[in-house]
Image (cartoon, rainbow, N blue to C red; front, side, top):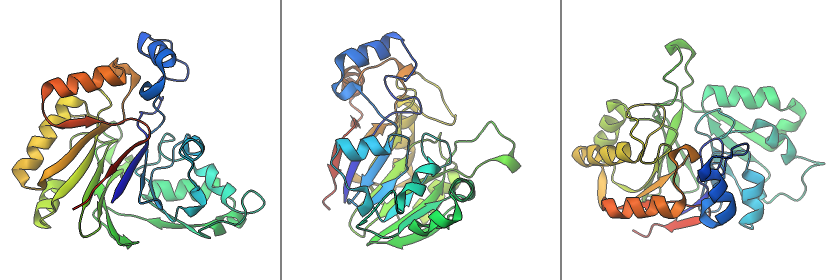
Length: 284
C-alpha cells in the first residue's frame, strides 16, 4: 500500500493566507517543507482521501493525472476537506479523454447533499455518490474501506451534528488508519477495532495543536496523539512495526517543520512528522 501526503495543513494552510504571525513570515521566507497545503492523501494512485481547495495545486506539483482517480472518500463537509463545485468540471467541455469515466465519491449525508446541491444535475454523470454510515464498509480495488465515527462537531446540538468520519483502509496485507480532523475517539471505535482483531500498520494522526496541550476537542495535539497511541496499545490493535505519522498542522502551533521534527525526535515516542509530498510504502 502506497500512501502519499499531498497536503499536511489545517484549514488556513501554512503560511496562512492572510496571516503575518512570526511563524507564517518565517515559513514564507524559508519555504521548502515549511509550506503546507490543505490536507489530502493519495493511496495507490487511484484513491483519494478528501478534496480540499488545493487539489488542483496538488495534481500539478506532484505530476498527477486526477482523471485516473476512481475513488474519493471525504471525511466531512468543511470546505478545507471538500469543495463540491470542482466536481462539475469533470465533464465536457471542461474535461476530455478521462482515464476513469466515473469518479465514485463516498461521504456522510451532509457531504453527499452538499455535492448534489452545488452541481447541476446535467453535470453529475461524471460522478457517482454513495452515502456512508458509521462502521459501514466498502470494498474497492482490493481495499476494504471502513467509515469510523470521528469527534469533530462537539459544539453543535446532537440533532444538528454532522457525522464526520475517519477511514480505515485494509488490503489484506496492510492496514492504514487516516485519523485526522478528529479529537479523541469514542470507546465504541476501539471496541469495534478490537472485536475485528484489526492490526494497524500505519496511522496518520491529527496534530493540529502541535505541542500546545489542548485535551479532548475537535482536533488533537502531540500530547493527545501520544495518549491515543498508548490507548491503542492497550486495546491490542497495533502491529509492532506500526508507523506513527503526524499531520494536519496549524500555524497557530508556532512551529516550522524542522522545529516540530526536532521536538518529536527528542521525545523519542516513535512519531514521524509529515510534509507535503511525503510518501510511505507499506510492505507487509
